[in-house]
Image (cartoon, rainbow, N blue to C red; front, side, top):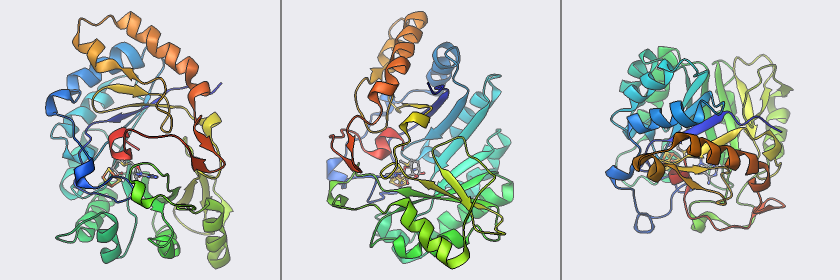
Length: 329
Ligand code: SAM
Ligand code: SF4
């Protein structure tokens, strides 16, 4: 059985973007009250008393948009200061990264994943649901800031959606030719915005690889991630291309992660709501950490049963009460 040692921690459910594949329209969303978000101290307590004793040593901060969290730099500092932390990464849309890249790096963060679905400012703005000022330039500045501060690996995540940004796959792949960046193409999952779900709303990774292969060639990369991406490289390129194919290829048997939501629910599988556990309520009532560890250990043991139960032949058949921005992707 796969060792479960990686926890994705959502810090906030709010976001300054409204990516149409991720969030439903404004009036369908309710947000958590501030008092229901886990505090920095509660997150660290859960890591020290529950997750680290159970063998977790890899963490990712996500959201919503984690850069909206005012105490993000302190949270990074506190997690990197834990002697058991082997790996800490951050997922962000980079809009606020230009100013935060250096403080985050100085706090000990080294790995960053940035969502970038388009290189075309107009297309970008339409994907992120922006109806005012263009956001692409500021996002790009955030990416360049992360690069110049020294984040390595710097990964760019692209959710590929037919008719929306699939025409940009080669341009996005080309970013890796002369930069040590890692572009990862993610198959769109029909969670979050039901207006966007229809047959084949996603493109199988193999079709993207064929396009790239025809243009430049494509070889398996010697750089291996510790996640679900299959990693390739354009010959002679400085960076790599990852493909996350959760719709066309089931990688549940490689899944090493659990997810903690911003309001303290522990979730064993992205696509299955079974078995969620409310850790915040336990924590805020005189907590019995031994009992919490036992319950989390039981949930971990059940994880292989729970993984992807609602997935059939590349379609998702379940109902999802939380959007990706609420789960943390
Ligand atoms: N705001 C941050 C960001 O965009 O990176 C972190 C949270 S976001 C929910 C985490 C990841 O989930 C992003 O890479 C995003 O592209 C991905 N995501 C959101 N909705 C998705 C969907 N329906 N299918 C596949 N990936 C999705
Ligand atoms: Fe926000 Fe990230 Fe979702 Fe886009 S993908 S709406 S940036 S949480």
